[in-house]
Length: 243
Image (cartoon, rainbow, N blue to C red):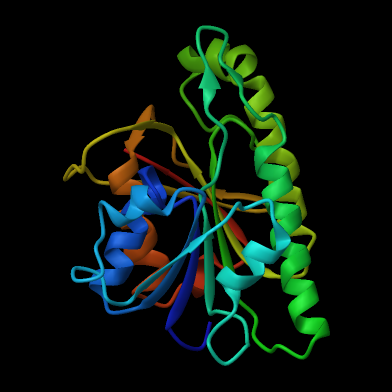
């Protein structure tokens, strides 16, 4: 990447990792757009007075028209970066997810929206940042062995959706960074974050194996390493983060 992003589109920023990354981006003065099914949820957290550089668009991440509005700048061209942290909620106690196609359908809508905008003359090559999960690496285990039953059986359905999503972005021809976060907790911490890197084509370059990372720490890592600083080392890579 030759320059730092000036405009970022967010999908899934009403809470969790996405909200954390959004807050840090806004604090840096970056112009941000967030797509929300229920804008009032985000507006309650980030008011116009506290976040004047935020534009909230009502819509669904599976709706190409709504996605198009979110990733298009005022000049009609594409934003510099897209951060997507969407996912479906698990249904307890089975851990089945409400929408087993949530992530893949979001990826399909996003890549189609980019294609349609370009066909109409829009310029730009946004850096797509996808927050995914550990447990789906093709190059070896990236979580402690004791968690094997959870990853193998309880999270199987959700992981299949995320695998398909990752493949969509990897094969899209767009610039991407996929983040494999370990099991998510709440609360910002001062813990050191371990980082591992995989190349989707050539395999694992370094490993990072741990149990947990908080949503807030994950969003802060995205802001500090992919937004505020040049992210060339993570371009078209899969990045494992854990504490």
